[in-house]
Length: 483
Image (cartoon, rainbow, N blue to C red; front, top):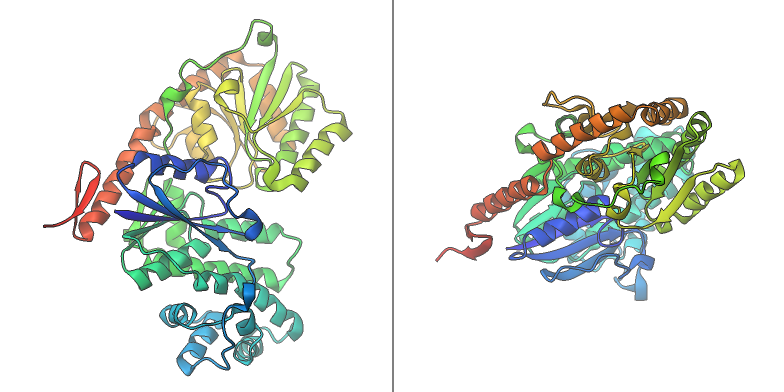
């Protein structure tokens, strides 16, 4: 079976999280052929992989959302036909969209995205949208904002998609548009595995964003919602990591009967026998933060909270373990904060093998403003370490338990609450017995529900069902056509 994995802003360019999940998924099914269709910002990302691709990955296709019409590809089209114009207009007005007409227009016509955005047809559609809904704002600003909003979507619909039996998206958004278009053009099936709820994540980012203001925030949010609605409508199955995420999907328009919960899983045995503290290190309390240094991880709040915690408990030391190259400006602000405030005992390790460090940690911490079901929490549990985490995504469910009575495996705090996070650090530092007990609870929880084998068995069943629905025979992982 040929499976096209569609990922946005992660694999194979970024370490951790969804990228790690995808890499392990491909490795778990060596008999299947995988094609990667990956979405990145621009051509500067091209080919800069941080993963060695498994042998069963046969192709990699890249979509650049901020691309240009290189070599002036696409002849100028004087006008689009009436059906295409109505589809374009309904898209802008957020009415019932004839996506098939749009897919055909972008896929079958030699159409320049840049020229379409500057065309009379697009201008008229924008004018209609403006007059009906937004006449209180400056038209020229509105026109240019809509051009910037629709540029990445139009590039997405121009993408030439490889033929596959199954299109497996890691999110809705632009990936969901690609998967929906692929299903329309090539047939096959569409599976969406959401790790975070894409629409809600973009909503949170836009609310906080400084580059867009006022009603334009609402227009951008509406754009992401309409793309998610398309993906939910066309998908054959939509998976989520935990129950509340499924509830959010349904709230956003996904039919309940299409949904399924598929928790994350890790290889617990990878954390057996990892090195622990030396006798000298036992005098200190080590806190580990395994993360990308990026705004969504709110490393600045972590640093501020640690500063206050260490004043109260000098035995504390913070290890921030993870890459910073992806968000260099933000990372530099974090480095400068530590230096300017003169905060001792903060060590940035960069990208490391966490197994070389995790055994020395007394606890780990995650202060993110958005998460799904973090693998770093599960890895901490596998290493018998308790966790402090903000109440985002499934962090509370992992730490406090959802359907078990094991108890707390750490402390849950509110986001961006420096005082509360600092207090949690101090509490953990001063209660070794509590740390050890919570670490064991976390270990029991990961053993009962979040093992890698459980996750792979679930996806083996999903892939097998899809193969069967396409008239294929699945035998010991090998797929063949019926004789």
